[in-house]
Amino acid sequence: MRTRSGFRLRPSSHYALDETVDTGALARTRRRNAEWVCWSAVHGFADLATSGPLRGMMDADGLDEFSAQLVAGVVKGIR
Image (cartoon, rainbow, N blue to C red; front, top):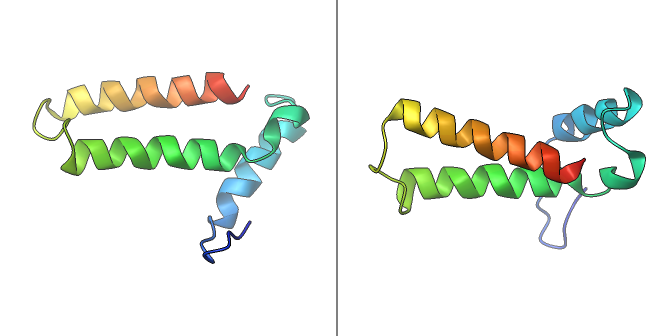
């Protein structure tokens, strides 16, 4: 999917989400634009962790735990 600015997400994100629909793990009605939800959450977290308020607040293990919680929340949200 391409935006007006010409930005485009990698096709692999589309394929992975399409496969979750095919396997029944994601309802077809929840599939539309799910890649944007996932992308914005992950990249928002990355920005906060590398140049925002989370930078230097926790060690690598803390960031791993936080990111796992984020991914779990995104998955729960799109289901």
